Image (cartoon, rainbow, N blue to C red):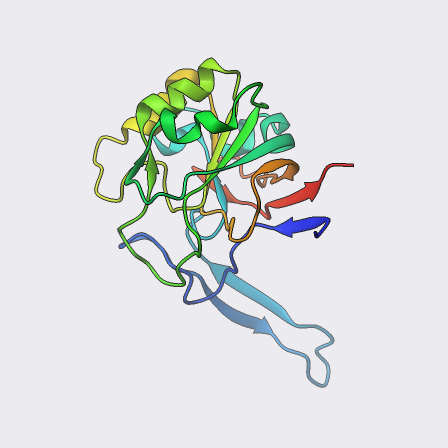
Length: 208
């Protein structure tokens, strides 16, 4: 069994994004050559590409940007919980087997294998599931799909429960082959002072 799981999908030009969002693109501003000692690149992308942390600003005008939120929820003991029955919405009954005594961070694995391209058919978290987790002391939820809300949602009901209950969220995690159980989560967002989200390099470390 490995000691470290990298649960971040690769970020590259063909990384899936929501339709209309900014895909990853890179160009070279300097390349090693006579008189040029280094390679230097520039890139553009949405902060929602790959594994990322949403800020409250993403779903409420005037709320906190990602650089203003506490780092504490993104670092510490977490529980990976499997909900692999293919439900469009993960409800509390899909997670009850992971009780009792949930830690402050819960990551939900819904896929046996993550797709390599965009698909709008993915599992999301029902709003009542966010509330159920919050009632049990959970402060951060994560999911292995692009959003905790369905792709066609215009009201973002689950995001609104995150806001109301002051939970943090990680999306687009890559939980393929990660067994259920407890781990140390390390998934720190960048200190982007005006951004609505941040990429994270999310990893799980085996508990000693």
